[in-house]
Image (tube, rainbow, N blue to C red; front, side, top):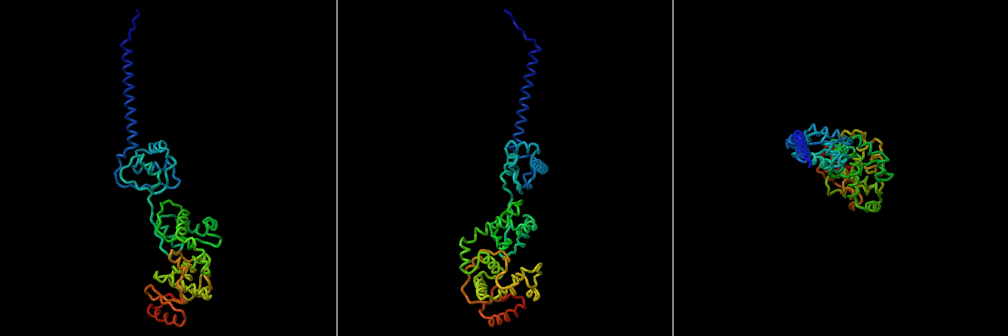
Length: 353
């Protein structure tokens, strides 16, 4: 019988190797646990206060990770990028402005940025604003530039892509007055399309037929609605004002309305002069018969409805009384008397036909 003996040094070597393997395994386990903790637990360095993150359109993952690291929202930009790959979100992070509330983990942060739950900017468009005024308001809210909106608003190919027809030469009249919510990096085209969708969502499906019933085309009804919007002070008079314009159109009288003249004046300073009232422009309804070529503002639903459903009256004139309401008359003599009465009271600061 043959006996095998293991030398003490060999036993010691095996023991050392086993210990090394155990230590290495423990170190690896600790590293994995630390890594997982880093990914799933909130970052210790975070203060817990609300932070704001902006992801710009087209920004690379490396740039995003770098900015997050600078804001102490992630431990390491390299770990953030690795986690994005691991979660399959490398190309899912969406542009916009984000609000980070409290302490968040890297995984939670990636999921938040991938869902696109951005801060939404609220913008309210009042009735009766001109297209350029709306663009200025959007620009001041941080939604694109006025120049970009102006470019698209008169770009024939873009307007036709919206399905507005060949007669439409600008977006004036179609930017529906409403309160909207947009993320910071919403494109100018998307903003315009959203406002146009609101217009068609609100306007009745039979609007074209209703316009035809009062001898107007669809587009002419919107033009008239914009004039009604600009002339209306008291909402209760909206359909009365509409009736005056309809009656004058039927009798082929000039509309003679100041807001149309003002629309045709470049850089209007707020003071309408006699010279401007005599200037020949397509929008001077003291000279040109019929409706102006385009809407002069963006009317609300009430004015759009009044344009195709005016009150039944024989009124041909109205003059502002100074309290938001008007004096309506059906002949020039009574109108002159009303003008003298309210003109003296208001010292020439009045609107009248």
